[in-house]
Every structure is written in structure tokens, then in C-alpha cells.
Length: 79
Image 1: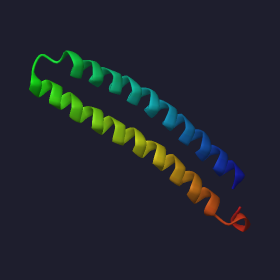
Image 2: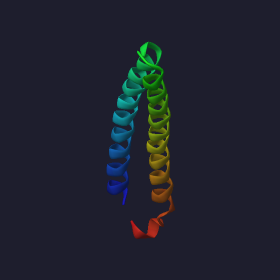
Image 3: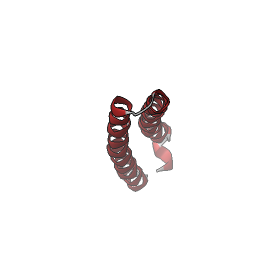
């Protein structure tokens, strides 16, 4: 059980780091586009993408927390 826990922890941390980095880059690009958008419609779309990126990044963090909670709920007698 400890090996599975260690494997899942490493994969979750890797995924969170990767998504966090990509999310930050996407957020910065969408923010810059919102500021320099050539039309109001483009600015509105960039603002929508900012919300989507923020919610997606939050979802990844919550999935990592849920994984840790579920792993800690497994009885130690199974491992």
C-alpha cells in the first residue's frame, strides 16, 4: 500500500505542477490579450477564458486533495 501511495503522490504532484505552470502561462496570455484586444468582442472572449482557466486550475487542485483524502481513508489492514 505504501508503494501505491508513493506512486500516486508523485503522479499527483507532477500533474499539479504541470497544470499549474500551463495554467499560469495561459492565464498570462489571456490577460495580455484582454488588455491589448483590438475589439470589445475579443476582450470579452479573453475575459471568459480567464474564468475558464481559473476554474480549471482550481479543479486540478481539488482533484489532488480528493486523491489524498481517498488514499487516507483506505484501511491500513488492506496494505
